[in-house]
Length: 164
Image (cartoon, rainbow, N blue to C red; front, side, top):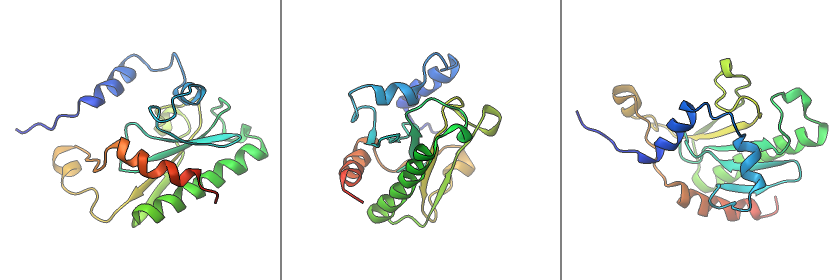
């Protein structure tokens, strides 16, 4: 049997093992002044765009409100409008940069719905390409992300700073 080493995943495994609920990463990261190391791409008035540190696919981004809430229905009109404007902006930027064949987009609200962070809503935007699943997930139950997070950040960040 061959092994593929992914030592960066240990942080995720330890977080999951410890429950990961002592702090809210979607509250903590935008409160810090380390946008690049936190993979934070854009700060709006009510929401922000951040790269998923454990992506399903290259370019997997998340849009989240600054306000800590598990309920979509609790968002005020301005928060909700900006949230989905940022979803739209994210799709436009990714389409322009990388021309994916499609996107998965959505929210997992609640632990039973698959939310890894279930107390702070966020929208996932995941670009997809024909054949991007290849044989690895089927045969080896292993996903392959074909771009380093730092390289993707360097490409995405200036695009998010441009006016729409």
